Image 1: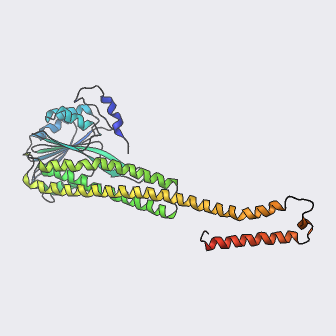
Image 2: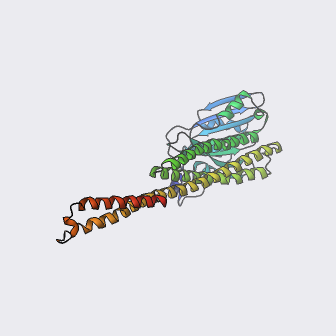
Image 3: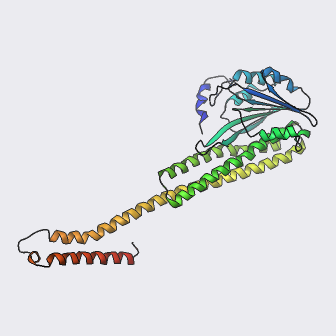
Amino acid sequence: MKDISRGTSKKTGMMPGSLIHIGEMRTEKMRITAINYDQDNYQETLIENVEDCFHFKESKGVSWINIDGIHEVENIEKIGKHFGLHPLVMEDIVHASQRPKMEDFGSYIYFVLKMFRIEDKESGIKAEQISIILGQNYVISFQEMQGDTFGAVRERLQNSRGRIRSKGADYLAYVLLDSIVDNYFVVIEKISESIEEIEEELVEDPDSSTLQKIHYLKKEMIYLRKSIWPLRDLIGNLERTESPLFDDSTFIFLRDVYDHTIRVADMIETYRDILSGMMDVYLSSISNKMNEVMKTLTIIATVFIPLTFIAGIYGMNFKYMPELEWRWGYHFVWVIIVLLSAIMVVYFRRRKWL
């Protein structure tokens, strides 16, 4: 997970509202799709020129304009000016390291949050900033890249499943928000699988790579926590808003998203505690291994101390040492050495040192 906040120094000394893309540099062309629907009609259009989406602001029914790519600042500025977005909102859209938040501007509501995905265990968690503008009869979503968790939403709209086609733009904004939050459970489930694998390594044979995995997952959980905890305030503010853009019937669904957010936050805290405990277990395991090694070496040294003493005495070769001339002296020394070793090993076993 890259730290894109490093590029914020580009804005040092510039006027508020200056549009400078801060985030992962991309070369692909911005992709704009527009969906206009009501209870009886559905139309999806791929927009070639950014000006072609301007008429959706006044179109009948509900319009959803999805923009993949925030690096083309000039087009973001054109869209923002036509839809009456505040310059600071446009600045936040192209600055891809925002903290989840919600702002009510009267004629529209702006909220921003993070979308996460795990493509494989090696690449880890990939984060993407999602900015959503809710207007009177339209929703504009800004994404950093193509590919997201909104495929199921498009399918529901196309097939007219559920109540989404009979509701307004506020319900569409809720559905997008709910899709992002529900995807958090998928990400956390995959993290849970990684944690279980590390737990097995800790029990069987932990090594330095195990410590690296624990440390990496701890960093991932810290980032998730920083991104998800503010989401509670965002959804709470949406629940308490008195904006006419939200119908009263939508608030009950927002409360459900709030409950899901609380569950996600609790799971993150639980896994953070588990990882901290695993770190302690790893350090204890390594310490126990070291203690076992030191105990083994100490026992070996203790066994050889008296043997070295005996060998040292008879290695002096003084002329009048009586045992040097004894026929059975060599065999007698070996008997003493074996007996001493056996007695010490038996003693250590009785004391459960071996």
